[in-house]
Length: 274
Ligand SMILES: [Mn+2]
Image (spheres, rainbow, N blue to C red):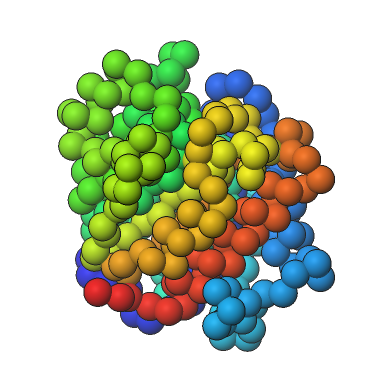
């Protein structure tokens, strides 16, 4: 089965899994903290000043999956995302480490056909294998591309490219808008069914310090919000991953993640745009 989704609202799905992290644990604790920031009375629930995303016809919440810290989690994530799609909703997943994106994209592609992926990250996450693990959080987009789950892979914010990942990007035809290209004015042009994957380390650590692999020289919060608001195509699913509360400062990064969730939900509620 493939084709456009019917008009449908976004649904949160927490993916509390961090066993494929290569450096630090912590992202498994992220979903309830991002949710708490989303519902915090410190702010309101309007996206872009035009839509209350937490209104009755807005963002719904499927809660968190129960995930073991083992390979079995991948099948459970795929099934959980598939269930959101079967309910006619647009999955908005809260990570978890970035390894969750492979089974999540797989569920979307199996239900709807290959999607164009817009991937915001400091890292390309294209390793064939990392420290002996082909399902590491450093590898999800290699698995996605090998299986033909994506029609395009457009990567924004990259600033840690090495020779192996450059070769992988070329092998897979990934379109890489690194920070140098971004600073020179390059912007992604998306169309059709889009899956948006945001690793919070795509932002500069000045804006989002609560990540396991902080990499200076990244995107401003405002730039990521603009990317979401100006995104063309039909945003069928998204994830916000790699929030590590152990490294956060005053919950700032949870607040940033919640802000991005609001804007993604608002963009999903606006429907397809040409
Ligand atoms: Mn990253």
